[in-house]
Image (cartoon, rainbow over all chains, first blue to last red; front, side, top):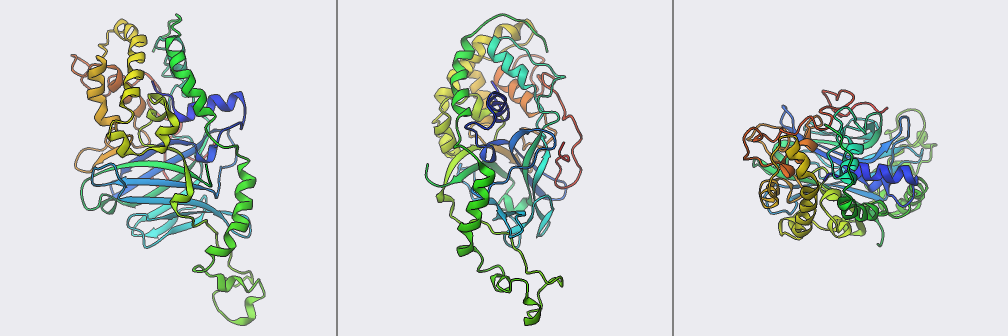
Length: 192
Length: 236
């Protein structure tokens, strides 16, 4: 099992760079954890397997969702919506709406920690790919039907992603309870 | 782990087709250009209102009109402009919570990406997950046994992995110790835990822990994460 989106994109990328893929909307990984300071951090990575030094991938027409269900019915109670936008100087900014605990929309330049009040923060920018996995071994396992994983081979070492990192109020995210489920989505503006 | 090279192409056939589909998923992206142009014209209209359009009109000669909000360098404020279309205006491209599930045990990827965790919980994708797990076990059980591991019977795999993988979300319980599968921190060996849950019989002696297969893949990132926001390491 275990085709990572990252890896699939990697294989595709290696075969035919740029053809048919939508890196800005291609989710790599989602992380979400509670910190010791009563915040919840959510990380969405996309545009995976970018080479060292490659620019980040920003696209104003992609909508990034971080969804939180805190009532256990599979329906989001909180939808954090993030978008990229440009200014007149053609610099990119990041805006996230509905960040639990924030005073309002949180926005500001990419590559910057943007504060939204009550300890909330939003960052977007190019980062080292946090995912570690032997994708070649996985691929080989599926091809051959034999276990071929190599714990020394991190396919994603040395590569970058573009990431959105949102730190929010943990209690607000959970709606006052203690359990929640988090997922992410991407959408592209326009008709299918 | 180890390497043996025999050919069992069954799995390849099963997974290759969805792989290709997934690869061709997106629209064609000349996304840099697209993004820039669209932002340029689409936005002047709707967005500027709340956020200081008034100051913006000054066009750099605004010093004299004394609105007092400038930063003193004579340049107008230059706010970022974001689209404000409602979510319904966007066509879903991708979704997920658990690592690997979307592209791994799901065959009908377009339908899956367009669906929701409620659909997952409703069992919409259970049949194909089961089929893919069966194929996986048919191919790998022999190897697992060779390494003195006890594979789960597919029905049992589903029973033990189901609550973790379906719906496709990260589950978090503040009242329990953190660490995948209770949330997912950057350093958690999530993939090997998922491998354990879908491949091994968690009732068999010596492999009750979700971490039994941790070490099959790298157990840590190649560079250290940051202790503070934004936590991910600097780009390469």
